[in-house]
Image (cartoon, rainbow, N blue to C red; front, side, top):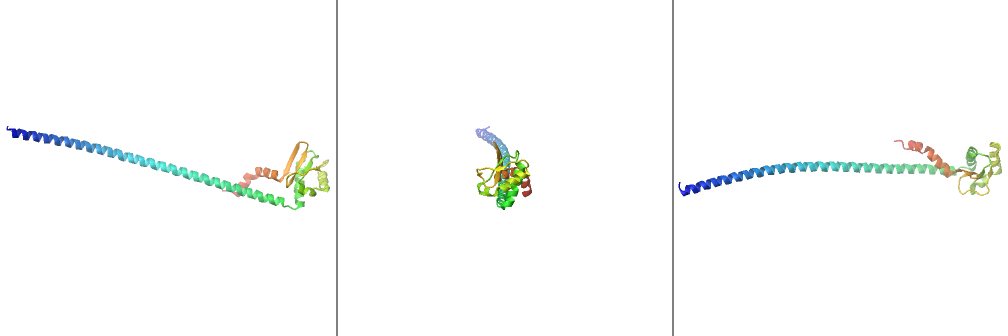
Length: 195
């Protein structure tokens, strides 16, 4: 064999080996590329799912927060309406004619007198309504009673306070409405705001 043939054969074997190595490297690179593309696609899908889940959770949180805020606003408005109704009722009671006012107070006094010896504290502006005849009629209705109007006026606009020693029974409009509200607020709210 000649040197040329030997060189040609070495050249052919080298090319063949290089092609083999290059082919194997390209195959390996394609496999690695395919694996990383598959991993990248899986990661992209996982991230998209996480983002959708997070967006869904955020949307639910925002909806719940908005509903809670609306409920608070509705409750506040209901309270305002109840307060307005109580204010209107109080204004009507305070504007009653003197005879109707005394009828109501007569019933309140007689219902709340314990010993019959209480002083009746009245507002200065309404002192003239509590005449001796009115007080005598109370004492007649409550046998053995010795009710009397207190010398000093009360610092309130409507109602009376029954006082005997350290015991006081507050029958002023503010206290009456507080007690009324505590007793009937849930029923009034249910009637006005039946949902």
